Amino acid sequence: MKIAIIGFGAAAIGFIEKMKDTGNEIHIFEKSKDIYSTSISGIRADGKLFVSKEMGGNLDTDIDLQKDLVDFWIGKSGNGEYETGHSFRNKDYYIQFYEKGFQPIISDFYHLGTDQLKEILFNIYEEFRSLPNIHFHFETPVSNIIVEGGHVKINNNETFDKVVVAVGRSGHKLIKAIIKQYPEIVLDSTKVDIGVRLELPNHIVEDLNKEMYEFKVRYKSKTGYMVRTFCNNPSGYVITENYGDITLVNGHAKLKEKSENTNFAILTTVQLTQPFNDPIGYGIHIAGMSNMLGGKRVILQMRNVSY
Ligand SMILES: Cc1cc2nc3c(=O)[nH]c(=O)nc-3n(C[C@H](O)[C@H](O)[C@H](O)COP(=O)(O)OP(=O)(O)OC[C@H]3O[C@@H](n4cnc5c(N)ncnc54)[C@H](O)[C@@H]3O)c2cc1C
Picture 1 (cartoon, rainbow, N blue to C red):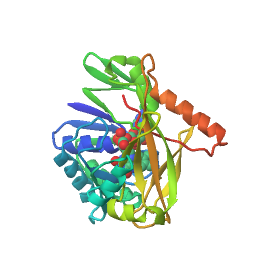
Picture 2 (picture 1 turned 180 degrees about the horizontal axis):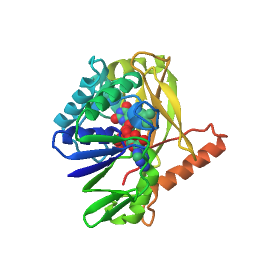
Picture 3 (picture 1 turned 90 degrees about the horizontal axis):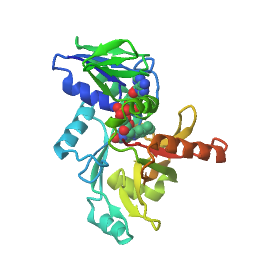
Picture 4 (picture 1 turned 180 degrees about the vertical axis):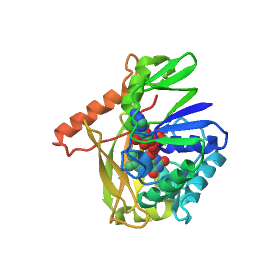
């Protein structure tokens, strides 16, 4: 079978790893210039993995599979180095947060670091590209996918038996085009996660960072919205992400180089109702207004628009 994968990010890597020995002919189309070039792809920042029964949105992922995934990424580092912590396995912390109305989330965290992630990505790429059935096509943005007679045509050009679209959030334009053409594939387009990122001096959250690496809690606000902490970066860095029309913020931490601050996000899932069906558009408008108010300095985190 001839398979196309659009995007070379975390999802594509998982798929290729499973399929690499099946003898299928696999072509990866990636819009970035090459494996070294920076992009907004999340695969290049932070590298935090978790094993938890209580996290992961609506996906119920087997705990052994989660552990296998962690081992896979750590194994690709070549040196086995990472940071770790255990969120709310400590009963005293659990009770302290619970008494204040928070729902503590039990999870194990493993942090590879933005710096080390570069080498890991390179190691994975080198292994894949050495296989005769795997072909990389960089600098090849896909803007068009057509399903025709049981086959799939990409960019009005080459035809494949199957296509895997794994473009992450920087691929939202392609996703929008696909769902416009094939609305029947959409399971849900009514949710968007919106939030803010906070940065604190390390000493304020030092004990939590040491014990848990990431402290994970949910809280039901007075307005009825469920809010949660997300993506804690001890001794980390806040960065801006430029998506052309809008600027957003994100955070990450390195394994070796440390700052004196910790940053984390507080997110809420906004669930809207029919006829609303454009969570990306909604998020982009809010981000645009926030940029306008702050003269390009107000920053907002938008995450995982779900379909
Ligand atoms: C700063 C940051 C930190 C993060 N930290 C963590 C973390 O610590 N732990 C964690 O679990 N998650 C983290 N995430 C989230 C995680 O990175 C994403 O959930 C994950 O990368 C999504 O995988 P993906 O393969 O769907 O997309 P991505 O990894 O984003 O990959 C998509 C790829 O598709 C390419 N692409 C896009 N459009 C096209 C197109 N039209 N044609 C061809 N190629 C295209 C992009 O260039 C990109 O390489 C972080 C995200 C960010 C931005």
